Length: 394
Ligand code: FAD
Ligand code: UDP
Image (cartoon, rainbow, N blue to C red; front, side, top):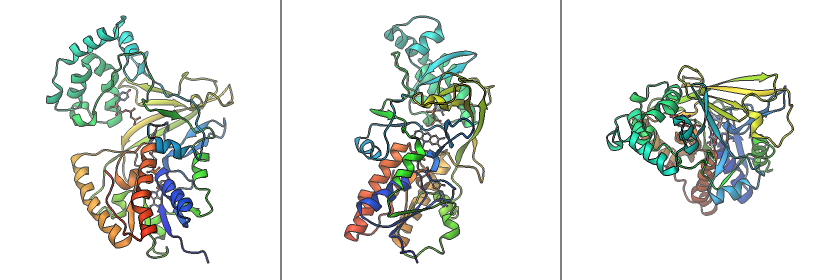
């Protein structure tokens, strides 16, 4: 019979794999990783589209970027990165503009050349219509930050489609800030490091799981097998926290996405990787053309893969993607946090990752948070016999 694992990790996304890899290689402990899906990697998983070989990010486009030195050092153990820099464009009323709103967008939209200070003065004047501090909803807040014309062109329709809610009914807090750049810099991310894994996401994720102390069991739902697992083995759970507690405090709200993939008999559909669609009457929010994520690769020049993205509220059985975070959700989460703390004390279960903490985490944040959990809670548990601290990270 197999020796009993020292740690069970539920979920093979970046959070679970980072914990597993650290425990396996730093502490020389055996880790059993379970995932209900038939593949590794959680939402970062990617696979070649069969007809074209073009790498498609199966759960939505994933761009790696970070300013965290430690995370950058860590991820570079498993993969090299290309020099890809993400840029996004948006189509509004049959004209194409660059995002985030920058000097180029402003000059083009108003049909005039502005210096940075002229553009700043213009936006300031247009935003003067409303006071940010008094904004009662997302629409008012956005107008108070960037003015009505830019809001109506680039934000209103897109936001309405993404949230399926009129922006006058969305809380102002949904947008903390709306970046407007008064330069022609149209890079999407401001981080120090950015790139895509040279051999793709799945190769990176597989290398993290390749340690001989790690066993990965796919197509295995924790809730189906938990009674058969060895007792008292500390567990890191990265699935949905509300499901773990049988929805005792109610279901947490999520948005999900639908992806419509199409192979087209042309070499290039849109000339860039991501095109947003700002018009409300276009049903999808954006189109991804995956070949453009890897211009360095040799892909067929007579075929391309495009994926249309649609956003909606998640129903039971849908993939949870973005936490909605209504005040009701926050109240439920508070209750789950208390239950999680108790579960750590009584059953040695820790909760982490996007689903386990009900928190939107970029990849670098999921990895960073897993490294902290390893340092602050898991290593002390194994090295010094300390009890597991079950508090959920903020
Ligand atoms: P996940 O990747 O979701 O992994 C959780 C795993 O747990 C899954 O594999 C799931 O199958 C498994 N699981 C759940 N329940 C059970 C169970 N009962 N039993 C067994 N296994 C279970 N980040 C970026 O940095 N850049 C981006 O551009 C970016 N784009 C994104 C786009 C979309 C549409 C989404 C949804 C996310 C994006 N992210 C991006 C975030 C990125 O996906 C997350 O940071 C990452 O997935 C977090 O990893 P995780 O391990 O916490 O969760
Ligand atoms: N947004 C918008 N127009 C755009 C892109 C984004 O109004 O063209 C707003 C929208 O409210 C959205 C938010 O900015 O919900 C965050 O967008 P982002 O593309 O960063 O989110 P992602 O879906 O990529 O996480």
